[in-house]
Image (cartoon, rainbow, N blue to C red; front, side, top):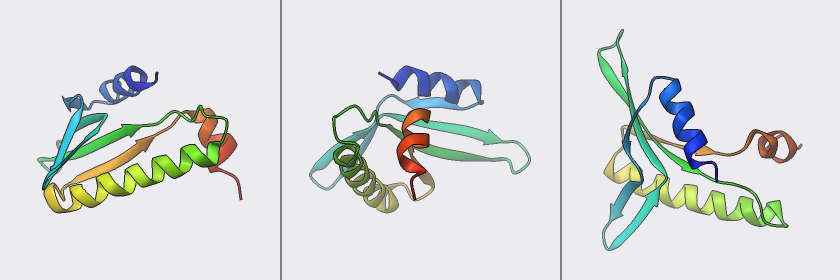
Length: 105
């Protein structure tokens, strides 16, 4: 639902989409983050690498969606820390979800 919106926003911000989806293989498991992207940082002459998992909180329970998103994020980031430690994992969520749920005390 929001995959293409996030992809377009990354491209507009100067990122190059390198993977769609971004495959993470760890031992006998294969999982997929939604996107992989790179951005050249001219001042440093180096690249920033990211992976993005897009989540839409649409179930009747935002807590259930949060549990799934956090579990998936932790799994992916654990694998990536071993396989691709220079790549940062991000969780993309709708602004409304961020404002109405993630900003709660």
